[in-house]
Length: 144
Image (cartoon, rainbow, N blue to C red; front, side):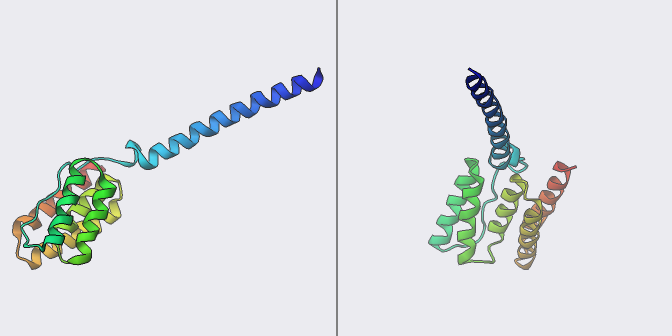
């Protein structure tokens, strides 16, 4: 009889601890992968004015499509593929910065946006450079 009570108490406490631990784990996973890890500042990707090879154009288009669907990590991977082929593609750096900002990776976002700004200036693309300035300001305001 005494053993049954102790076993019952043990199972009750073990269940309570497992429930609390499961809730904590679920909250951490949600924060890492769910809405807690996102703050959508930029809803649309920037297009490209650059002349691209077919492979790069396809990667860029796939990245834009994933971006529009909210598949930000997939879009980042796809834009990185385009950048492996052409490291000077300002629009890909620009979109990476926007995506990183949406995933709350602000330091990476700023680096990507600044690189895009440098490339826009080298290409004498004033509109692209002004868009970078506006995006950096929007990022700053969103985190204020």
